[in-house]
Length: 290
Image (cartoon, rainbow, N blue to C red; front, side, top):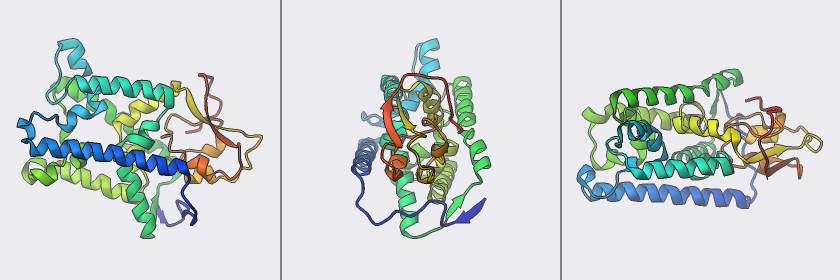
């Protein structure tokens, strides 16, 4: 790995495009909703509270509890029908709008974007992972997903819960019921992911997010794509430099399965019409290099 301040080009002093303003607003709303739900849960009594825990408000919980519900007819502890409804809504959303959940709605993704903004504001150098190594590390998401599914089924528990950095951060247990002896590992993992996300944009999303792995699989049949027009493209490479997932947008015909739909590449493109968001039918993969 190398460290450089030029890894992600600094933003020019210009007004934010409306898409970014809208995206940040949507992200802030989802963060506020989740933090409010977690706070009300703890204030009402924690695990003894009638208010649902954060676990019941996560679409990934639908994946974790699906086997138990289908085979045994019961939900795993801390999961509920809401998990399956949220998962179903997410899958429909992926088919219609690709990985936009990651770029626009995921609270943990919003925190990582905020950390990148703080790093840039403080002019802290970014850590740049060599592109080939970065590509292989992205498969870590699928490894994490496979481990979670396997151990969740074999243990009939939310096996990942005690180390899940999303739950560790947004569950607010570290504020309301701090217990190092019981949750020390969760604090360490959450802290490591936060620090990693400060130096590597979307660190968790790119290398370890199990929900991101599911989204990338389903997104292959998504109807919404960002397409590049080679006949209009001037090959400046600005789109690839702007991409938080380090996708080779400047070499692709349409976005790959790892796209989060943030539209940073479209905003960065200086040539009108070279990058466009459009609904397309499933076609043979012509170019996705990542």
